[in-house]
Image 1 (cartoon, rainbow, N blue to C red):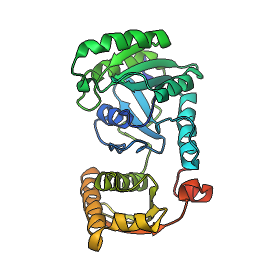
Image 2: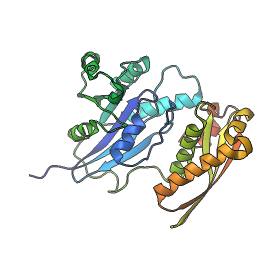
Image 3: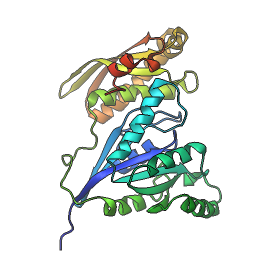
Image 4: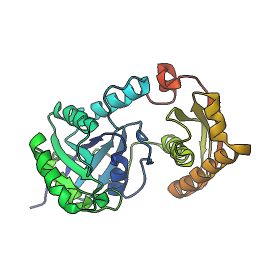
Length: 297
């Protein structure tokens, strides 16, 4: 007897920098969500779609949740993460092998508010020198909640990720395809380009600049062989503008080069990028500005 096709939504929840986007990219098999060592790199809800002959798993990559956030953009990110749970068939709560932090417990309380199948992922097991440390963590975690499963894994090197993929379909409802076969994300070219630029800024600047930067695509032209994009990098202070541009524009050129190379690989066509840096004080607390650059739908 042929198995019924299953399809559903799987929310990935956790504190900032726990590895959610890395896991999503690993499962989908291509980079659709930007990553960096900086917490709160993910700011938007992003869908990653994995389709086979038997199922379609729609993963929802959410911003890292953190209690007590005062800035408006952080409040929006917390709300985005919470809303992702409402329609989820499964929630993957991710912590690391370091154990439970205050923000992990906050994420657990958030997940417990929705009636969803809750699976705990213990990420970064590759960082453990002694794998015997996992057993006490698994036992302690099982006392906090009756998880459907507790799965240790490493999103970065793929260790035990397949075990997660194998167990998920049983928690999805019988359903026809929810997205066309072959589609891997719900985001278009404009989003991919702006996020790629933002990732390269984080990687190039390291700790030199805070999170008060955003990327807005001002103009986008696409043909079968060429993409032209004009983008503005928004910061909150004049001093930040100088840091991003660098001496004689060196840093901004480097960011543009790295972004262009990755985008050409992603879209398989030539890419021309033009970047400008502009200052808008307190943009991250400005609802009008946040709406204009896509943080509020």
